[in-house]
Length: 163
Image 1 (cartoon, rainbow, N blue to C red):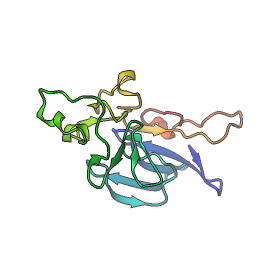
Image 2 (image 1 turned 90 degrees about the horizontal axis):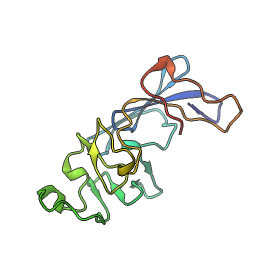
Image 3 (image 1 turned 180 degrees about the vertical axis):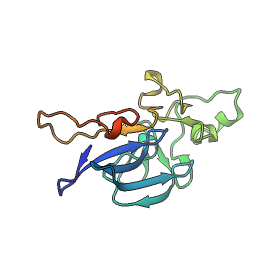
């Protein structure tokens, strides 16, 4: 749940890779929408995005790059701007390019830490830096604590997660 300056409450919904997909009002009406291409470039945007959660759950920094903790990612060129400090798999030709995002397979993999990619539908778990494979569903973004706790996800759709 997110509360705007005008006091309007919105529920955030994530896509299968953990990125912001759309927000809805309490009555279920669509408030905003964002759609990404496979490499993270924004294809469609409607309304003001009420969160800084972006492609695969990462956040945009002041320069417009996605912060993957270990490295920054430029979705415009579909590459990390720094080489991976973990040596690639020498038996995988895609792993030789240490700037590539998820061995050039962004439909099936995510890289929540900037170092280790994993299957989108399985998740990375603690070894992958956490945060990956959240699955779709709703995210409840809590405003400053009022003691009431976060509101439930609308209609019980998918998973909920406090941010």
